[in-house]
Length: 259
Image (tube, rainbow, N blue to C red; front, top):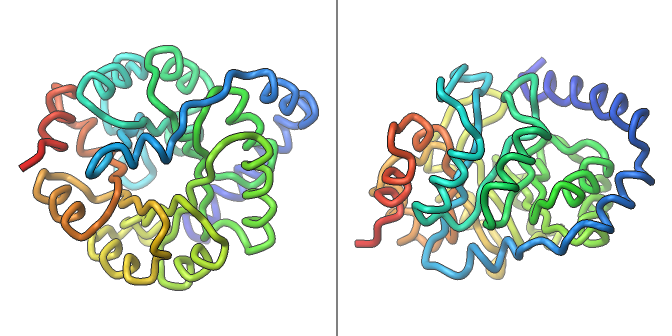
């Protein structure tokens, strides 16, 4: 069993338990009553190459990323440094995230937020909207085509933007066929955790011309960002390399500095 399979199996049990406490009808009502979120895609397209800065305590591949972890302070530093959006991890068991962290980030900044989660049920999409998110991550490797169609429809009904994450050529072809407007290329293979920026450049050739293309994981330097920008990538999602820096605001400013 891969780490992705393990996470998804745990997630299905977790969400079933949460639905038993807060039924989908209740979370949907909370979502409908929530304020209209800030546009995610619009924020990314407002600059030559956008930064989605990630709030992440740990990961299965590297363990603890930042010892002193204050989600609100991290989010404020990202915003002050010039990030266009923030990704907040929702998984608690494997990534140390969760609803409390998301609330702290949402209260600290005005930027659009990405609900970074392993979505296996429409409950999570309504939950994301109720929390004040602008976009919801959907992972192609975790969902079949019927799931994607259904979850895209739920995202539309909930008023949040789906960001479809792909890892290989087949998933990019599925993304193109789905009509996805936001496509993230994860440079880290969720099955092996091998990471290379070449994944973005390879899959970019298969991406639909009108989509917003985001490169995720393995982005460490200004040179990486400039190389991605030169190739036509619209945004980068960066977490670990920023979170390991003592001066987060300065690290953001440096990473997205224009030539």
